[in-house]
Image (cartoon, rainbow, N blue to C red; front, side, top):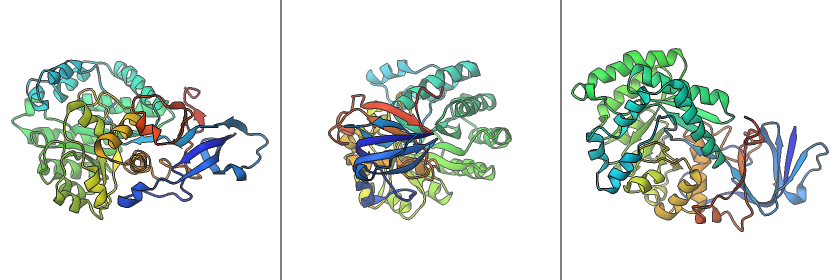
Length: 415
């Protein structure tokens, strides 16, 4: 089955050959075609080019995209979409002046979500989570990573990962699964960290591996949560089961966590609201992708990742939503891109690169997602008529999407 989109005003992120990522000054360049066509064959991109060279395809379905912009779907490499209930009460607590730490010390935060999740059935968690997944797809996300981490018990973590697996089986979107048992220490282990780490290593990981439930392993490497040495234990244990590290780090403090992550082969380091010169030096010439989560900074009023400093140093940067019930109850990647431009002073080109090709890299999906390239998945966004792609971050709260395509079909026709 062939589909031909014609008269595309701007076709963004066109790459003749697949690339893994873009870094530093390269991120300011977003390759595009004006007045273009795009050919989809089954679930893949088969051709693209200028309208003056548009092929005549007798049996293709033709769609006129006059005035519209087409860009690859967003690749959201850091989310916590699977959870039970919400934490709207904590939202009000923050308005009334309580800090993240104070809320956690009162039994809120991650432990609050863990209590709700362990009290909720797997079927109900799936039903709540699929609505969130459908929402982010409708907002333009075409590949997503989803973490566990609100179970903090053997059964709770397995329950979350099974829900992620079921979502992957039932939806036409690339989903990567991350085991985040090291999200927080349960109350009963507050004074015995090693006992909980042993539970993760000796009980959770073997069962997760036996059911093939995860692609990556994560830990909340932060003051008051998992120390550098504790996180190293988690990373090394996960790697024995084939789970590559993707680590929360430098959200509130810098404690040499990034160095440990790079040394232990982390695919990405995520948050980075606090970044030192030493951290930047460590990341240079590494294969580790820094990931910024600007809507988290927006929601809980903490610093933004210093994007300009990092890009000027030649680093790559990805953008992700951090969709979770406590600090970012939104997976809207359009807002993430806009916030990166408005608050982190990234250019539209840099932000779109960060949310597409670099986001794909942070999920090991560079070969199949993140750009308009022949042979890649036909996952893309068609906007409403726009003057320029600059309007994507400029119109930060406006729904600019005409249609979302996953695997060569308009989303909504596959389910």
